[in-house]
Length: 193
Image (cartoon, rainbow, N blue to C red; front, top):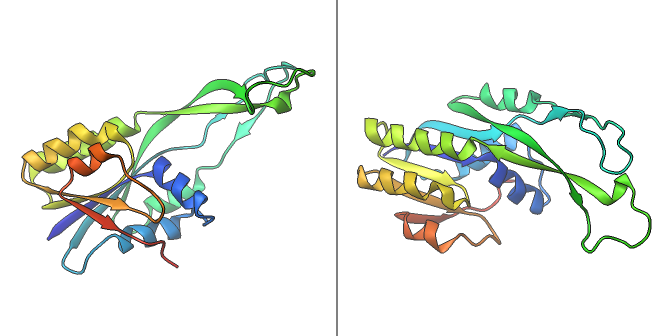
């Protein structure tokens, strides 16, 4: 059965780190292949994420510039792997938020705050690609690694077009009931070693 795997990188990153595992291109590739069954023929793995934020916003208390200089080398390494296609959204800086609430009554410092980032465009790109695969009948089955209910319209469209939708569940993670309701199969996958 011709199959494509769609990976929400932000979602998978959180799960891998919660499991105290190293989030790296080789491990992402292992996870993707662990999701396949023997009868599934892999057409492509589509990975959706944002490059790290680069910028120098002012710190909330001192007003001094801070520096974010993350590297996107690992994403380029992932995109060079066989059958991988990487789709980029944009990571937006949304200011600083308190690390603890309520805030301490003592004097505040920059250390009491952490940066807040928001992914933009990832869900839309994922949904558009699922819709394109469904419209072109490029595959018979899609495997979806996400916990985001924003994917529901794309999942519904894929099923209406006759594609089977497999939702991946990792150890210790519960998926939203709405996602389960609009998938054909739920597949339990353990963390590869």
